[in-house]
Image (cartoon, rainbow, N blue to C red; front, side, top):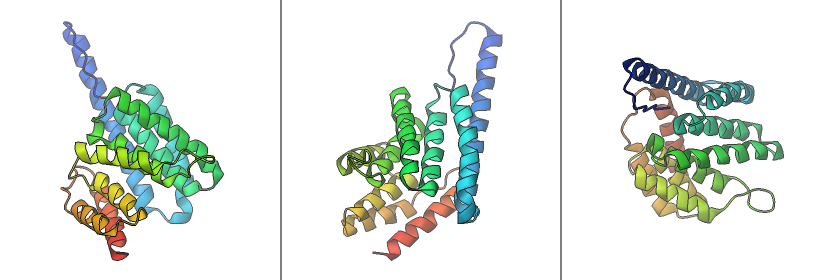
Length: 208
């Protein structure tokens, strides 16, 4: 949570800045652990690892309930756990993630360069539609394009939009978007995540 607390008391102001630093540490920890599990742990061990990380993320979200950044990462970790878990048992998890992303958007739609829109859009095209789930290609496109508007050069915003276009069989546009994703600038402190995402993008491009 980027705590911005106006106060005439220097002590109170200092404690607010300290809280902001602690929040960034929590955020960096969640991001780092997510990347480690997703890209470095063997597939048959990921579900259990994500299950444990969900507990940490849920605790962080409870402690920083008004931090859109922490809520987004709680949702991302829940979504990743659901992806590893699979089946109908994962549907409850993605519904919880959806609520977290929607809440984060209410607090700050631009948080983490629109990552809530990226993540929410990815859920809409990957989750089954009614009557099983809430999936919707129309809503997926709306949210993913909103993410592109906020972060036009982002690796994740372009990766998920490109993957969606591929799912829609728009292969030519998917290629352009995915190639643009490869041109995304490196993210400070996210080297492992960037490397893993680029490998996923290159794998998709090979299918085109």
